Image (cartoon, rainbow, N blue to C red):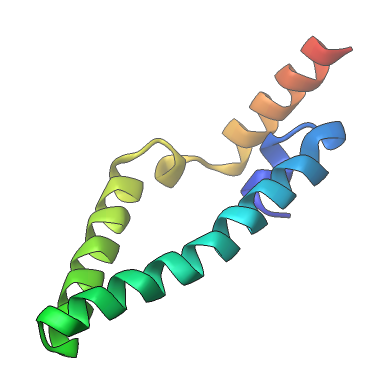
Length: 87
């Protein structure tokens, strides 16, 4: 099971998954547009440098977040607490 499946209540899992999928599909043309505009003014290697920096910042944000340090016991406790609250 993924973290999303463990955290999101079952009755909202379909909506949450469709939202994540929509965001993923919308970022493809957005990234392509940004790459095209940057390649007009700079070389293609500049785009890859920027993309690598953005990916590095996202990784650092994730590592510094609470999600990185979660273990299965914390997730199960949160899931049980959420399930008992919804009933």
